Image (cartoon, rainbow, N blue to C red):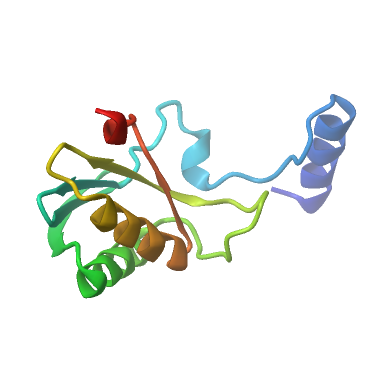
Length: 130
């Protein structure tokens, strides 16, 4: 795309009242939204599925070393470039879910490791309240 067209699109968005217009990754133009990578925490084990159309999966312990390995595994498979976490920056999202067997400390360790790898954990529901 020519640079002048990108600048014009930014100007149109700004004049239309959009705040913080930005480019989206190539998969953002497809009709179907991408499938986020998913981490399911169950009884001290994190099962992760790579998402973004990949059927790759793996299992990790939820201790410090396992959480760090999980985050590194996901970061290496993300189609988004790594960027320091900051407001307005494109974030590489990861869905994190647990059940009644998930310890809060395991969730905290996994989420911290994801943030350190510039991945942003999201939650599909409030399982902590169940």
